[in-house]
Image (cartoon, rainbow, N blue to C red; front, side):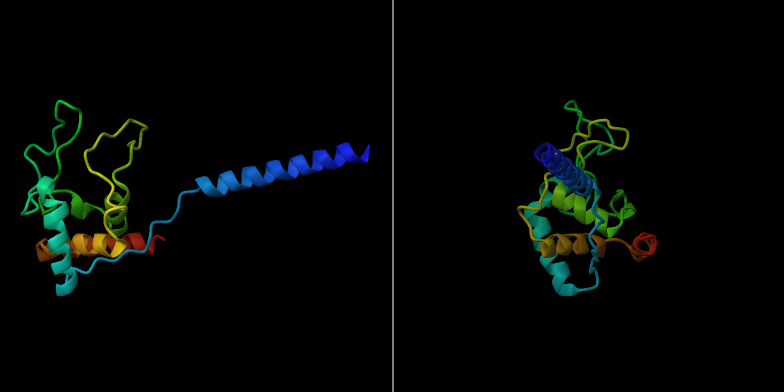
Length: 161
């Protein structure tokens, strides 16, 4: 009589541990604390070299993006957007830009629709410091007013944590 109760108790315990593990594993992880350094000449120079080698073929040597970047192509994918002030890059805080670069765009948009993109994940290609350098280079090319607006966005994001 004791043995079945002990076995049932162990089964319940293992089940609770599995459920707790699944809940903890599936929790969204906080965005990393990332800060770009557009005023640091060495970081910007490193980022410019990496951008030229890894990003310019799609996003343009002058950050101009591909033609008709807002219109899906026949394959359903959006062309590479510009990273200059005419694009939407500066509308995203540092941590989001970092995650998009490292992990690639999400596979779904907010409503569950699939999101098709040619943007690869660079997490296995570039180190975190190299990703920050590239993003710092991009930000260094924005006009001062756009950089200031981006700084305000980051401040708001950090204040809400």
